[in-house]
Length: 257
Image (cartoon, rainbow, N blue to C red; front, side):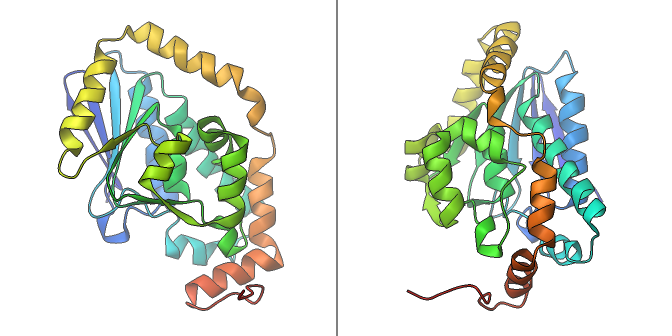
């Protein structure tokens, strides 16, 4: 069963994360489908704008629990390959030759918030909650880091990465992760207004603008991001953090203030 639904309406394609029963949590299958879908849409001359959205109550809750559990048994090489698959998906969204609009609601945690950072324009519903919560599992948000740094800068990135705290849509808007906040019941017309603005822009100019920003900020990425997350996953702290999360307990290194 596919984890995505891709629909077309003229020059606009909509990619829907379609695992509502798992709050659209990311797993290897969904990541591979994202990579493939955005690669195909990027090369489609009939597409001008891609809207990325989530089915059900949340945009994307981050990593799938079953995937997290299985990752504890992966070897070093398997962990690196797994992280490379993640990196490929985020890169496919960010590097898409078409304008990408994230339509965000409910929650965008971990990799879900990373997808928001990959979009050219992020529209979020009032009441949406965000988090880069990896550190609470003893892990690091390595593969999404270049896109988050580009979106909100090193200061906000450092504060949110190191605390892993949840933050609301108003803060996400203030720091630049979200560009437009849709009032209650106004998500569809707000996204439509954003899409209309993009359809009135020259498609070659849109691509050139995207490439300009990517090339100007190329120094924000590192060559060893998959290895960094593999190191965190296979380390004692990461193993304990994931185990504690799955067992619904506090990890051994958590200290109450």
